Length: 340
Image 1: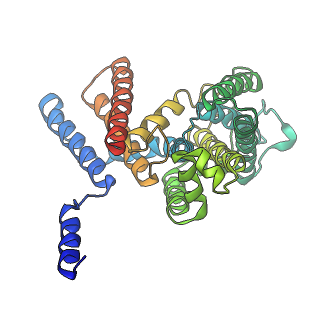
Image 2 (image 1 turned 30 degrees about the vertical axis):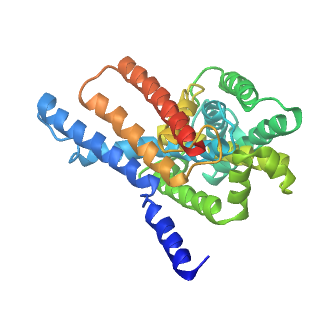
């Protein structure tokens, strides 16, 4: 090949390359479009602004930060081609157990009178430990028994919810200390979510942990052949997801100043929806934490927007289901184009 031909070939290759925007840009544009639609509907229906109500924006961010913490773990699991249905029930368990050792000494119905007035760090550590144990169980079942992640985490979902009801006797665990309530007050949950999102974004993008995670999701057999201890990595990933669910559960109880066995209901589906909306492929091997952050914001804005324009809650659930299906269909279409 002559030098001229080589240059022409290289020029042709360069000319055929298409500039692609980062996937976060397209997701951000979708978020902006949704906000503008609700702004327009707000003026038409309520004669009010949706965007410039800072109290509403604050509530959206606070409400979705806890689900966002769960979604970080769910995102990592889905990148490996797995799924986690147990996160919402783990929120309930860690909420009631954490709250049970966060009660004030002057509360007459304290579950453990000798463990009252403890600093907030103790309930947080206990909730984290419970989530860690549950995650190890999930990961071990999936890694060593060959049970599909759907079945393993479904079993944990049912068992954990039952445990939360038994532990609390179906009653709220209340009378919590001001120290514990501070943990879930103000912007604390938001800061925790953003810190965790930044940490795991770095881990996935720039470390061996991330390379192993994407490799397993892309081709588990090839990952095994290349020397990755797939079983160990899966256990680590499900353990991380369990720990994040534990943190989310304690924050939920602290925000409500009460632990209830009904907490976290459907959180796992909200987390999965946010992850898929954020561009993570259910087929595995593709996804970013930054996309999930935008997915959380989109989900929060939509739910708040529906309330703002006075759409009943059951319609909201139907729309949320449609969004999940559409996101999955879009994911399948992207995968077909990628393979073509």
